[in-house]
Image (tube, rainbow, N blue to C red; front, side, top):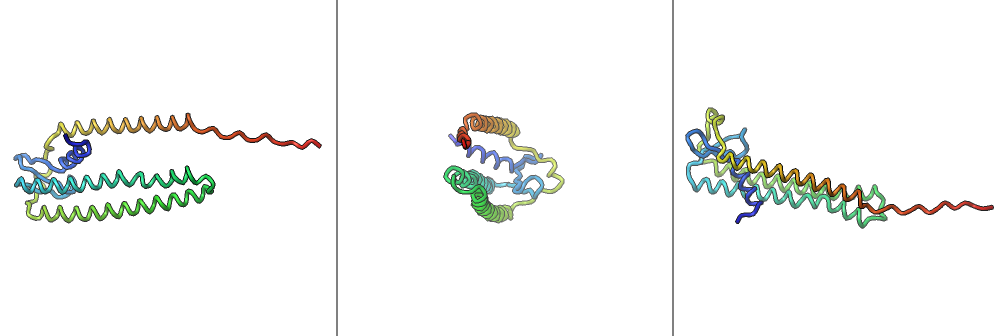
Length: 188
């Protein structure tokens, strides 16, 4: 049984392949507007699929791991920095989050560069699809595309619902503010 993550990566890899009217497999390495290549051998197809799946998986995992790293410093400063002025907390939180975000972007840029070079090397021996055939390419599995869109919509709806419930719970069960001490009046 494959994991949902692996199935999602397979779906994204599948979206980069099409069929021409003659039934030949076509690889679109950089989207539908870029170049397209005929993939005639099964070994080339397997190599290309493994490279694309590896890139997609690594970039998705980096995205999943970096977003908590951006928000955790703010959370820690908010919880444990009660004596620190708000301006200092905000400054430090923005600095740490910006550093993590820039490191993440540099890592993604390098990953993209390696992927682009690898795909260029794999497609160097493949024949390019002409512009006359590009408009007539069809998806390999339209039913899987519809299923994936429905699943994405369900996941998005569930995420929005969970965020709404979390906000509702946070506002309902927030800590009460301490009562102000009564004002002392002088009795002279």
